[in-house]
Length: 543
Image (cartoon, rainbow, N blue to C red; front, side, top):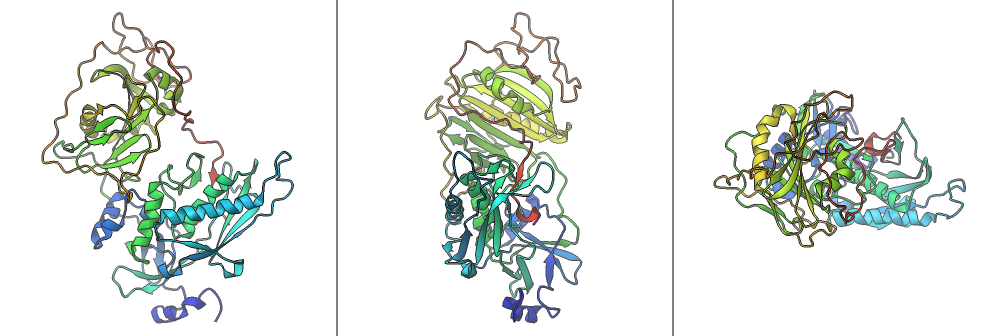
């Protein structure tokens, strides 16, 4: 028997009398998971919590399927069976037309082939034994083909260019219910991924092609959707060239996908419905912080966080959230930069902290003996409140704290934010004022450090009174993008030097002292998205 169903004809006859693939088909309905259904899934299965390394975005890797004869959909994890590894892979060398080649330097097509194999090696390393690959002698013997196409990717809409595609519409075949509870009998196969080695500007560098192969291979290994976090390589749009390698969440998601049994059901729900979730709320109950602080000796700070909040270490600091990295209400982020003064930092990056929002409040003050500046901004049409704190350490570092919550919940989060602010301690860094090295993993297995359960709350000391009243811009008001006047700042204290207005920003910054040495870290790009983001492709790409 031939055709796509031949391989699984026995299972199909046994479990679906209507024929191959009749038990379920891919749903066109989107699936937006929440931290609540994730927690339920994590806690229900025996040993499942240990298999789900965090941070991860595992629910976004699941497939939503319509069950035949039922008015419900099932969310299921579907990937290659373990006995299919190592996968035999054949990488086509692209044929590059002369029109795409540079007249000054000819691009060797074999470098794109090497880049593709580097991408596969990265996934194999990230999977820690879960996935593996071998080179196929020819395309006919391959389980998976990587087609490198010597042409510019298509542009299906203005501002978007497709640089890679992975056909997933028929990748997951559900044969029926498994004899094991909460599991389906599934088969998964992706025969090919397609990568374009050029865009509208010309040939891409091999490292960009490697990133695109990395992304599409994530789909080909069973990740149906995209990461919701822009810092992950499996994020949908490739805006940031600095995201050049798999993140910890990318690696943890792959390892979790292959740690749970193939065909495991994540959730079942009525067709067209979304998972139920409670209404957003601020923390309730007595304010308690962890007894043991989070200490970063490398960057030089310590912090107590609320009980139950999650800590996610990052390259230049840490973020504490009241949920998951992709679903939370409140967050408290600490970032350490190599800038001697608040003024020098804001003159370069101030606009990035406002991003077209509306400035609500600003003030200079003293925080535990350190010069500090506060900036409160309303974002997303006043539905989100951010408070930005900038703290000079006196040794060439600047600590930036960003607090965030929905505007209607900000009053409830404020006491928790204030307690974390008061617990923040400035410590000596390993190399004060030097460029920050890349952060090491919190643990060898990739788990994030979690707050320690406390018997009682840690007292949250109030910051000392400011040495002098805050200085503000006299007779000036910050404006949003539409020019609407924001809350007027307080008048400057008698004798206090006014803060100069930052050009093209509308945010006052502390007056800079004598010129400081150049920043020891590389320039940071503005956070605004590029005008023509490149869509890597995946399940949403047009094929």
